[in-house]
Length: 152
Image (cartoon, rainbow, N blue to C red; front, top):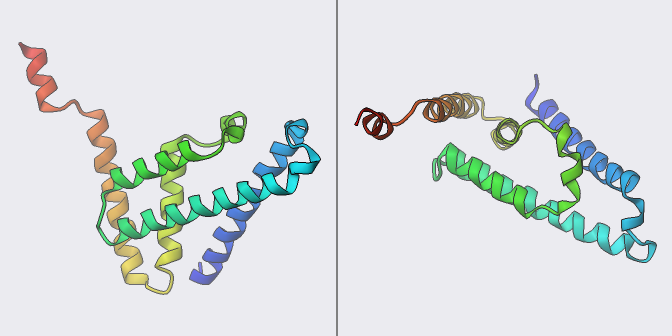
């Protein structure tokens, strides 16, 4: 898939998801946005969304530059989720699990930043997959300290 086309698709999907969240919010909870505050509330939510997207982009850039690990990047995404307004909570049951969603966001961010740099993109995606496998293996395998304590 062409890198430009991939970027356009990612931007469209993120935009549609954002609009869908706002649409669901207004459809399911219309009385919580009094008409006099609609525009003001929308602007605050948009600013929060922009700040969150910028913070995610920064986290992705730090991962690409090897200034942080995959675990640190995922933890940062989790922190950003906790900063997000509570209105998305009722809709979370339709989302993939946080780890999977964050992984997808990271891949899309890497592809967006490294478009036009196929060698670096391939190397970073390979490192990302390797880091993810190691992170998952570390969560499934008890540490040697735990094994030693169990034997005592």
